Image 1: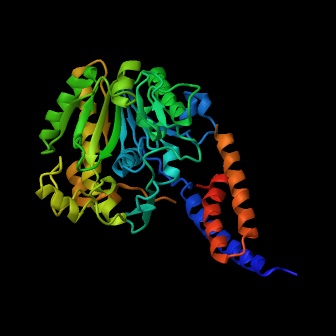
Image 2: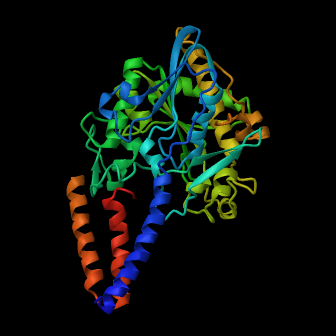
Image 3: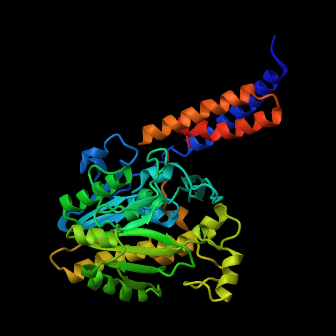
Length: 377
Length: 47
């Protein structure tokens, strides 16, 4: 006969299992990869493992969209989704894939640079699971809000102190899963380092002239609405700053610090011949001062606590009741990419790059991101 | 290293489940279940 405490143990076990199964469904749904619709300019889609076979079959392998122009010229790599909790980075890459065409030169776009980071989100951040856009035909497209770092299910445990392999620089242990601390990567390292190595190999093999890593930053973070450029990329980046001024887009220009290692703008510039830059926009949904964290905050960028912080002089970016909506943040990135293509052609006439079809800044502000997404069937 | 940590997690999960079924106070059984749940998710590589 079953003892009394076994009856209660059975009841507790059933309840616990039901809760675990419910939670598991939510966690596992995060691994579903949303479609990105191949636009008219995409010539080929390859996996990153094509450049580094060590990534094949791992959660770090990811799609690389290639746009080849009618005429040869310069080449540019767009790295989106380095940090999957910075959605304008990913969405800018998606809009490129679905809209851009290349007349001269070659464009490479990686929307999910840290594919593993898109399969979970950060505990205790209260981040929304996803965010959605309404398209012109009335349908909706939904995208996952991910984590800053590689999924610990894919790379575990974290060391107490992360040692950057190429320099020996010591960082906090959880930075071991931060893609933008692992460059140039190594072929026998952690999953994060393998992805870094794959991207570095792509740049080396394809002789990429210019690499742009797209990011977002908290409004209280000093490097924001800015370009961070490797010293060799400074002339091109200066062109871009002036070019964006013509569209009333104010953007700062920061030199890549020589002693901050593992980041794209430092390591890709040092380890390869590419001109390496990084662009930042303002995203309150990842900031420390934010209030309610939901889909609306991700999309509208409106937060009353940041308005207060602005009044107190605590922010590094203008912040009012209008916030920093997704269309503004994506528009800044796309305008920057267009200007970089133009600047590369100006600075290096033997490496022309002509892009078209990219939604303009004013168009995005007027119509929103959804107007430039294609229906996913 | 990952395999070692998974083995440790599985061992602690087994102890938590054993504790759940031998404990006579239902409140302590519930506490054991709360310990077991995240371990279960990690051992099965869900979270």
